[in-house]
Length: 241
Image (cartoon, rainbow, N blue to C red):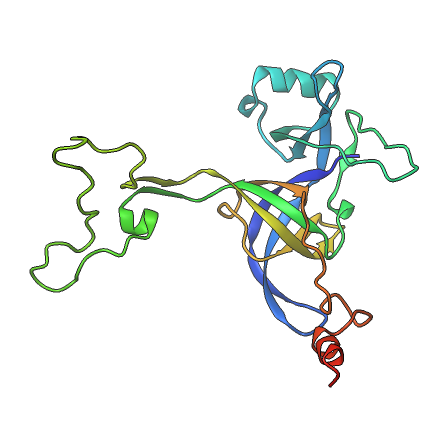
């Protein structure tokens, strides 16, 4: 099947781990999704599946091409459409192909899975250099006249111009951002809700693309469970103490 799912950010909350640690979590409405189109290497040059997040929307909010394709395949209305990769086949097993009309639900993920979450960050409008680039600014005392100004950025004799790429004030936010290795804390298969540890990009109600982590973190030795070796005891034993 597919290796990801679409969702909407609900908001932030908190949860407790089995060890009693309180952690911040972000609740995500992950699905239900439906496969709206299948990309093949023979026709498109690559293998992928286009998913649609099933939600109520007016037909007028969809383009004619999207509306015709959904009606042709008898699919529910989907306003948010994105492509996700296919899951690799297990060793010695044949991969289950994704077909148009297949459902994709939040139950495909389990607790402690790692995801790469893609979204559009909050728009901050036109921002200065202190907010946009974390400049230190000048003295705040009376008469300094250099509180939040960027300072000199040009040159006099050579090259007699402002170099390209200088950090300056400008548009901040509203950009595509991907946060990697976000851990799944809890899964509610009945309501298709995922609790992800930490913060993810975008405002409440923003659309998200959740994929399985490309490079999940490896379990550190001595911190993955009770059966592993304690690094402190191992170091003392190596020193003969």
